[in-house]
Image 1 (cartoon, helix red, strand yellow):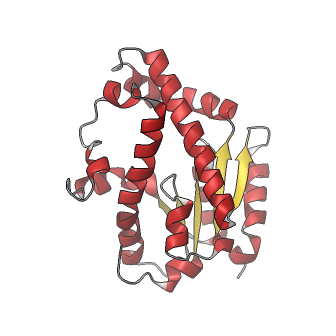
Image 2: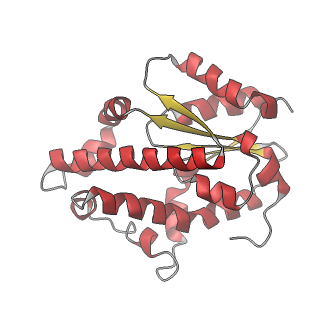
Length: 215
């Protein structure tokens, strides 16, 4: 990790983590516009981060340089979950380097599944600026099924149906572990089940971060 993490990151940056398909991106886009925040969406930096992979230093990230989708999704789910955590641990330094290098006078909002609670705790981020959004199993299945790229990936698997089940179960277990970690460190969590409209969800998230957002 960078030798010294700036106070702008630890005290004046907002972090929204959690599982995929929980509405994080939608909420963060709205927050960035409403409060003039610089939005750093981790997914937008996937290719840049993979280009910075050192095979010796980032062995888990290196597996995604030329992924074989069948090999990835047909593995035991517990192995996939373990490697997902390892992947994000390796990637976190790249995210911090990006944030340190940002040229902006605005406060920052960072969003993505890579924001493991253990990692934010390690750099002593203000807990009031952290929120984890975790989808229910049913909502996650529904939202994933609506994404076109899913079918592109699954067509390369020998058993697409089982691969999809493994993928979903990986993310369910990932979400459960992230929620447990967040509770351990006293970070706020929000369960998303799809019963609320986008604006209502936005209002709830805004409420979670209200005091920090208005400082």
